[in-house]
Image (spheres, rainbow over the protein chains, first blue to last red):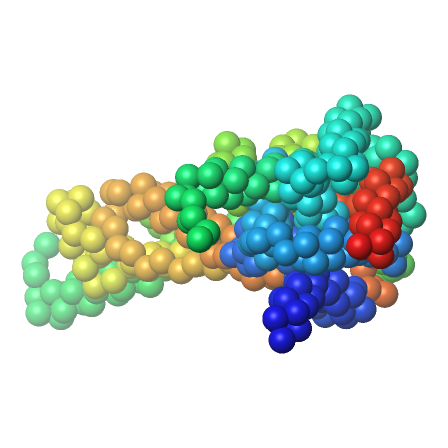
Length: 203
Length: 291
């Protein structure tokens, strides 16, 4: 009974819901038009686009790469039962939208889940740091690799290895940095909160 | 001279006739207008310009210019002196109006630059050849052509009879003015010769003035007319722009939109990041199977 309940809570419901939503939006031009990050529409008050723009994709290749990364990171996070994952996705999406709106005034449209996927990967790896064994070292390596990757993207102003389906837009490393920062901020906040809570003695 | 009753009656009749005649003639009209059609299609013998499919490269560089007229306004007036001094649309005023329109459109991210083009760069009846020159000079893709039509009517009411007292001309507002103003903005894609949309702005003022301050009052009405018509035109431009955006989405065959690099951004995982994540996923699966 307990095992069944545990299995139910650890089903990656949020990850799958977000992936299915992104796929549905990709195949619906109407939804794409309503939900894409459109700077003019946001200026007119359509603020939801700051968040929903992350669910829109320009091409099948763009969608495939983003969903694969997000799916892997999200499933591990939810299966391991790391808390506040929906909050992470929501704050990362909103944070990315706001950073791009204030930081990239010349950019009119934005789409892609990679910023949120980066937030998920960073969140996963930060949790991995407090575990032990090979997994901890893999997470250290992944965080280090991600840091170098984002730094190179900023320096070269282009992705390290171009993925397919990215020719129709300019990659925005700001979204990856914003996602990583949101994940770090949320993790530190939760870690400090956990430490400050009184320990309940188990008798 | 001996004044007899018929002589007095005749004098009164003549005086009344004179007054009525003077006042009857004293209806004035001043008109100042420019026409986008005259500027772009000056010669009707030419074959009609067939527009191509416009390619709108976003963000756009937009120019704003007042369409040149053929010079001068036409005016008619009775006895009370020249009234065409009321026209206030000087080059400075034109630049101010254009700046007002430009300030409003700078907020749109799909507008990269807005160039205010002085009247001296547009030749009367210059047509698209003139616009091509401007396009080359300023590097603009789209131009907003502003034209105007302002008509001022002046009528003298019964109170103008008091002008015969001289003092009346200074203190009694016997002049009734009507000022009708229309500003029209037409947005053209220069390369394709295609009109994208247009937005007019109109305003009407009724006023009164004494004979002495008539010119001043007409000038003030003229300025108010242009300012208010500009506000109305800008509000209309907003509406027409929104409609145009919908039209572009609905009719992709008629309007081609091209976005320059940097205009559309995206977040995408590259191969290195994807390989890292897949590595983590693979290890996670392997660990779970072993456990």
